Amino acid sequence: MVNSFIKTTEEKMKKSVEKIAEELKHLRTGRATPAVLEEIKIDYYGVPTPVLQVAQVTTEERQLVIKPWERNLLNVIEKAILASDLGLTPVNDGTVVRINFPTPTTEQRQKWVKKAKEIVEEGKVAVRNIRRDILKDIKDKKKAGEISEDDEKRLEKEIQNLTDKYVAELDKLFEKKEKEIMEF
Image (tube, rainbow, N blue to C red; front, side, top):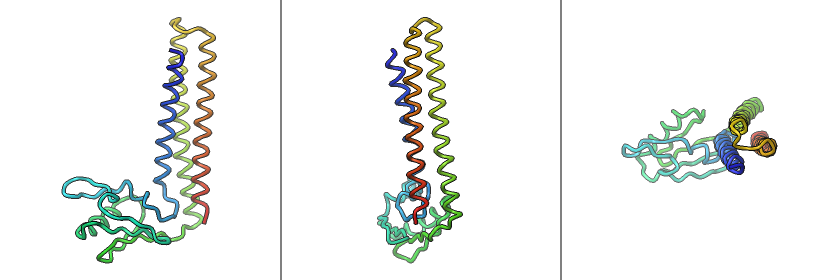
């Protein structure tokens, strides 16, 4: 039972970190990358379908080129990109949709870094909440006499170590994203 606390805690914390890493992946960095289109869906014969599944997306310099497999999807893709909250302006030239990524200003980059910091901070709060909940469970088990005081102290220490490990991992994710945003 003692190991189940550790295992459960680690699984939950790992999932939280993975979720934050996924959110950071979708944060704009000023680079032309197909990842920014992952969340954009279009109506493809009545089924919401990601743009990346109905078109070939390539990068050229500071531009994304979206070439749909069916020409009638050009306008649909263009409208979906405009409707998204990415702040991108697509250009439909009749055969492909192009999205230009202008060089971001320092102010824009600072905003993106701030947003990344907020996302990472949410992750840290989630990890700490997991720690709090598990420690409460441990204290309840101790009061009920299901675990000894030594086990309680050992578990508290191990859970704190896990918390520190995953908070440090989140910090590394932030540093990596900040570097990615600020380099140009």
